[in-house]
Amino acid sequence: MTIPVSEGEEWTEERHSPLSSLHDWVYLAREFDHAYRRGSAGGSGKVRSHMKQVRDRLAKILTGKTLVRFPDPAEKPVTAHLRRAIDNGLDGSMRSMVRSMVRAIGNVRSQLAWEYGYERMPRHLQERYAYADIMGPKGPIISPTLTLGLVLFAPRTTYPAHSHQGKTESYLSLSGHWSENDNGVYAPGSIVLNLPQHTHTITTADREPVLLAYAWCGDSDVLSAPGMRFSRRPKTPPA
Ligand SMILES: [Fe+2]
Image (cartoon, rainbow, N blue to C red; front, side, top):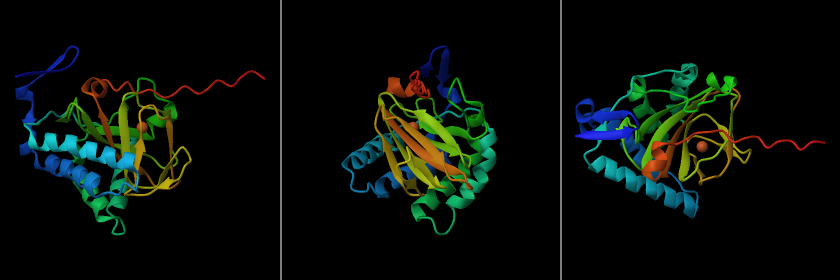
């Protein structure tokens, strides 16, 4: 079987492994299911419906003949903060849901491929941000309409304004404290929903890194070409 994934590249079945044989990855995917089932929607119908959408799409992945294809593991400067973020997420005061997911992340840590995703990265961000997909159209767990992943920020980071076209995003907070659009402070266990085209900026606290899980729900053509781009700053009108 040949699995076309993007222009100029083809993945063959020989280069894939069945998800069912990769137990650490199955456990991690199940932790996402658990978090989106047991986490609180805070009384929001929109958050609740997104959580259900994530669970429904994940159920198909977990029960179907899902394949896994690993890119080469890769680190970025910010991954020097990953051990601390994992340690904080395993802290006894954290909710057991968070601890379980962070532990499952620790078990696949050496296989993660951290990347930037943007063609143009502000230089200060190259030291302070990276993400690693867990599941999506390009893998590692191949899933056409649900992308799950991790994003790591160094302390005292501002992640510039961006929005997502054609897909709904949630962040599940796993370690550290952060804010979105200066609207509040989120702690481990928080779920924050960003509807399509909602512009959002993230800031992280002064002393500890922030580790978030993210989920994107969208059509396969949107998720396979996410086109990540920072929003342009509005030009200051001439005085
Ligand atoms: Fe986002």
